[in-house]
Length: 241
Image 1 (cartoon, helix red, strand yellow):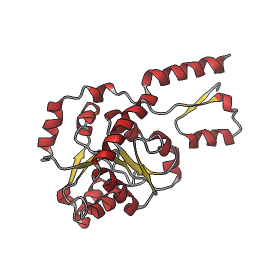
Image 2: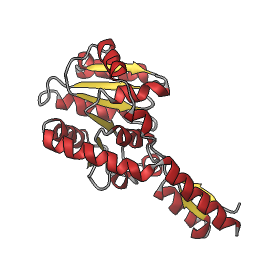
Image 3: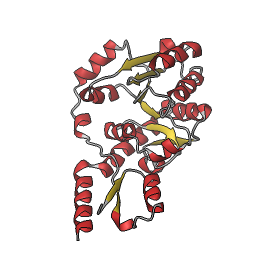
Image 4: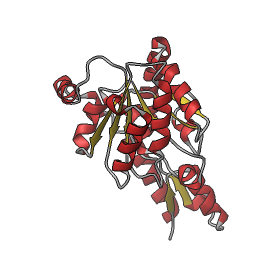
């Protein structure tokens, strides 16, 4: 092939290690289309709020697959349980389906947080912006493993586009995605205590939350679909010469 695209630094290094020249490799991250999040209907947000029986509680949100092989949602549930004494009115909203959904619901019961969890299940893509409108912070829970290092999580990109701060583990490109910590907080991966502390820091500090929310929109601009498409076209022309 003339050129190879990868979406994370880890994968780029892997391709380089195979002897492929750097000039033939292009890092193409996931894009963030901010328009659906900018034009989300307040009525749609209100409808989801009523459906999920929410009032004005602070909502921690997870968007993604309920599959423990590559998404340690159990780590998030453990962190949220620890958060309960500090943010007692907090609600955890989990959006997505997967092979381990029932096991995760059982774990929520074991941890005593079922009443403060909302397992939404799978939703249409066009419903995701309204659900972000309910969230005060989103979470990308990770362990420090090969899967986490290789991924460029779409859930983070969408949270940036929605202007919702993110808490995640300091693995792979996540710190870069958040502009350091301009759009969220990076904590020790695989550590429920650190994850809970990061969530509390944002939920308990309105000034920090506002600063990070503003930073989200600035970071999202780095992943504009039109800009990334232009970069890709430039790469195509480069490798064809």
